[in-house]
Image 1 (cartoon, rainbow, N blue to C red):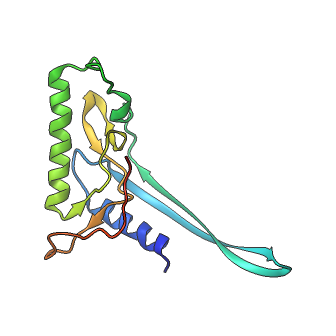
Image 2 (cartoon, rainbow, N blue to C red; image 1 turned 135 degrees about the vertical axis):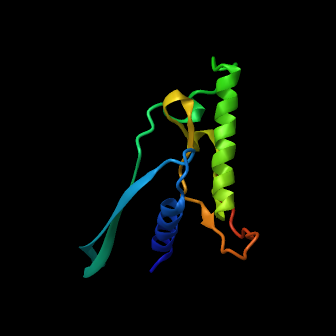
Length: 144
């Protein structure tokens, strides 16, 4: 099993365990591998072509980054507070269950009806073992 496959399985495992009102609901996945015969230097080579798809609930209001600007963005203070509170509740749930998101940003916060925030995009997430309290990063990941 190569690194891409391991990463995909880790993401699926994190998503299957995450069940909270402020976490985007994972519905399922599809993984397909097909062999493709290609010519390489005059010799036939069999290559694996992998296709993967993750299926999540539909979150109609889009991502938080579309709703915030330098201005007050037109959201009432109480709505902004509920968004912040929901993000904190979702993060608390993840951390309580030993899941680190590692790429939290406005583009990865989706807004449901009534502006309820849902944390999404667990591609860089890590699950800690029960007795593990920290991880040491050897590679820079995430986005700026």
